[in-house]
Length: 184
Length: 168
Image (cartoon, rainbow over all chains, first blue to last red; front, side, top):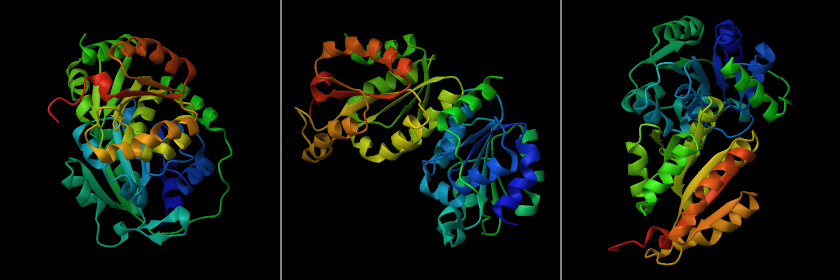
């Protein structure tokens, strides 16, 4: 399975929660598959999906799912100690780990080589780190939501992209709609 | 006047309840004061762009955030300021230790100091420079201005403002 197939499969789960979605193809895919007011699409700033999601989870009670990639987590590796040391039990970091920088032409990341992000997360002090196959993402994600414990999911999948349009929504519109959904 | 307490009081009075910090020697006192306050959730970050991501999330969660950092961080956060904080119109007071100014003992700090105001001006970021202790009186108005206009706003605080570097 590739990332877009995973997003399509977990969309019915994501729909009921606040989602912060990574820059580039992940946001474009989620936007095309199931655009919701509860989705915050990152249009820039690679690497900060996990940080934005953590800040959001620490500031209000609803469940927040940050969808991130292995390349983006590597860009902002300092996020993992911050997450580990500031536990928000309404926070789930879903790392879709395809071992490549998908949005830029599938160049390999170090996570696709020797580096195991699940081990990095555990070494940083994250207490609930779950590794899963792409096919099991929905089950694992639902279990993490139900557990009401902060969870880091590293979902291993194949590299690959689908053709799709960029998001043309204005960023202020995306934010305003999202903030109203947060407050609803 | 205790500057650290005054700054923290102004943050609290303006309902700033989520503060991320990357330390600087000059900021040690204010960071300690913020950490001690029940009204403020203090979350240290490992890098300033990460901190701005945390603040963006807090803002969307309904909290008023602030970041406390050194001016060298302007070099780290230009992209985040442009494509996250400014692009999505988010308010962000940035209390910045302005290293490399008068009474600076470390030569290398001057290398970023000479770029600091130019970079902030290039980014169209409203910028205030606290040089004398009494300048802190404007902080309350600056915070109100920041949350009125939904922009990142820089408050540069130099060594003279903090009373020098002591023994260094």
